[in-house]
Image (cartoon, rainbow, N blue to C red; front, side, top):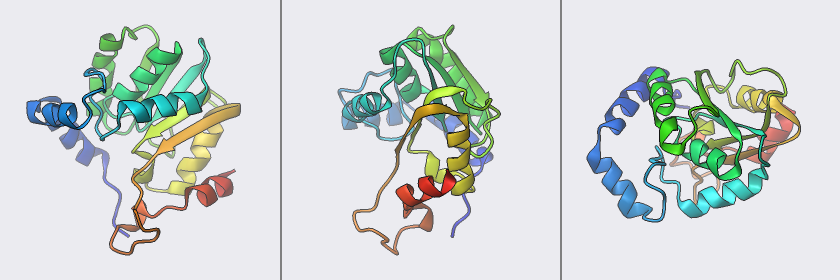
Length: 192
């Protein structure tokens, strides 16, 4: 199994992405209906974000945790749409700095905060969030079972976890890295 990327790897990527007009143009062409301020680090679409928002079933005043938040765009959009507070967690200090600065684009400087943490150790208190989301990031955890247990720990009773992830067209396709061939349902059941 290949080693998961490190915070330093992502720091380098996030440093380049923030300054890349070319990448922003690719996002605009690939997802023209996505609000420009979202600027995801993946190719999440507006339709997928709306689906995630519906699955989270958030109510105004609740708290959403964005695990592996990156530059913050998708989590900030979800929080703004639902009228909830947001805490984003990422192991990249560069991403956390960018997300903190980008909160103003969503009118969320008073309702969003971003902290450096790992998917396996967020530093959030037990039962802190009403829901948690991870957009194309959870599979980068160094220990998937520990990350699943951490997500369950920070959720309030009845809280919802919504993950998006790259999925192979053919289950267990040996050409793909093991980290992209995850049996999510089994993993999340075991973590409980």
